[in-house]
Length: 250
Image (tube, rainbow, N blue to C red; front, side):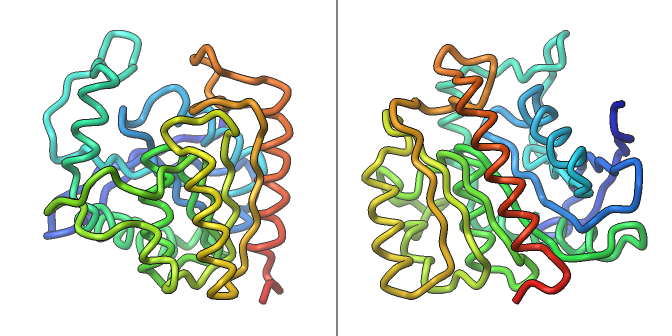
């Protein structure tokens, strides 16, 4: 059965109105998860992840981080941007702005009377990068999941003034990071540096590296998709959220 999907909106960074999708489980929500979409925006993969989360009982809010931008959708509901344009747009997107939007999204989700419990954040690819930065900045987050998230920018800019890994000291929530062993966008070097950095700060951290997997291997639309490995990853993700967002979790 498809979970109820509602349109939502709230004031984001700078007071701009941010649109969002709210996915609610059929029964009582166990807690909430912010789902941060990839550079292409809210698409069929985003919905696939939302269905996985809501099917496990988590109310799932998907803020549209492109709400301010004018962008027509394709006839099939998929973002019409090319991968190159999407990556360029993601590179130009202000980390500070996204953090403000996600903070407002977290407040909106926490204030709903039908979403009791603890709050987590999950993102893949560039959305995973933003999920990590948000988990390092916000005290609302009590669990974070990163799926093949680039954690070292090729270069810094006004939009990306700080390397994500430099924010790791501020991480206050348990973290699960998933990497692909053959990912050239979020390479094993990022996994190693994250492991070393969080280990030196004694942060609660779990890592899952899938040997031979390329970037985006959880997405069935991509040629690198690994169905069997994807099933194992989602099982691990849901187990992690069960533990980290349990009512009695430390």
